[in-house]
Image 1: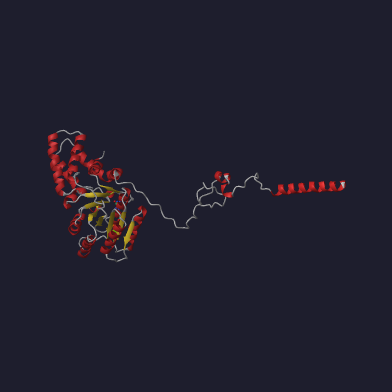
Image 2 (image 1 turned 60 degrees about the vertical axis):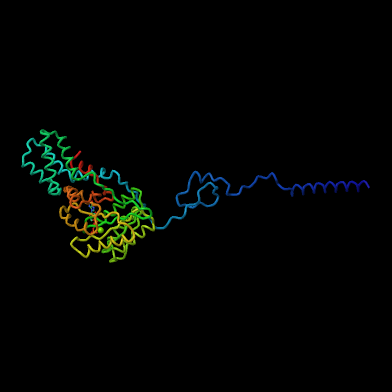
Length: 391
Ligand SMILES: Nc1nc2c(ncn2[C@@H]2O[C@H](COP(=O)(O)OP(=O)(O)OP(=O)(O)O)[C@@H](O)[C@H]2O)c(=O)[nH]1
Ligand SMILES: [Mg+2]
């Protein structure tokens, strides 16, 4: 009996121990260390050594890291859009170009006017110098007459007085009070339209491209119209200028009607809410009636859609007085509102500024002072005269 009891006690103890062991094995392990999901694990190695641009990150990134860079575009490399300098102060910046080409005139005149004795021979020479510099006969006579009177009153002259005298007379002929504002401001929803005209090779396309840069530099949105449809190269040339500053070019097929290209350019400009549409035209001789009529048509067709705010005649300063007759015919056909005088860096005949304004009754608004993209400046009469006379 006693041995039975002993067996029962042993069995009971073993059963208790087994149940306890089983409990220990099966109970939930609350105190085990939590396993962090991979996305919240810090990755110090990557922070210390950031991957190279374009390299893809693989897994394990924390939520604070930037998204992986998109794969690099193969081969298509758009050139960055340039931001040209604004128009303000451009002529001052280009003053040295002017001084280089025009200062011979100034120095010569100052030297002659500083002589003790100003006899008729000296006055004749002064006159000749002005005419040689393309000032034009009538303005030259006015300048010389005025100078003669002033010198008589003054008697002996200091170099500063001579300079002031000449400065005053040249400025008076150039007329610093002429309104040289370029009309490039949009009218409500309608963009301003600038039509660029002139004989062959004067610099129309270059000036159109440079003007687009001036306007973009001043914060405007520009559309270009390639209404020179004679040569595909002309439209390419313009488009290249536009692309550099982010201005679109509307062009037609070679031989297309320039008036319809101009119309389309203005229509697209309106659609895209640009500030200014600049239309480049083919060079044409003023003697070719058919081509001059075509130019008249370009303007009239644009006017069905918008106002032509500015008709810029591009004149090559190196052609001198020859340009004058051309200018008159263009003025009759399309009513010029401003002159862009190009290549002033390449001639000493800056006097053309005076004669062309006088002949046409239209102000010089822009001057080209080199072949560089930013070598076009709004004309400033005082800077011009100071460049002629030297500082
Ligand atoms: N030195 C100098 N060269 C200029 C200036 N403006 C234009 N040119 C040059 O003049 C040449 C003719 O320029 P374009 O703009 O093609 O002339 P264009 O009037 O459009 O010519 P067409 O369309 O053929 O009638 C180019 O070599 C220009 O670089 C300037 O202000 N100074
Ligand atoms: Mg051209």
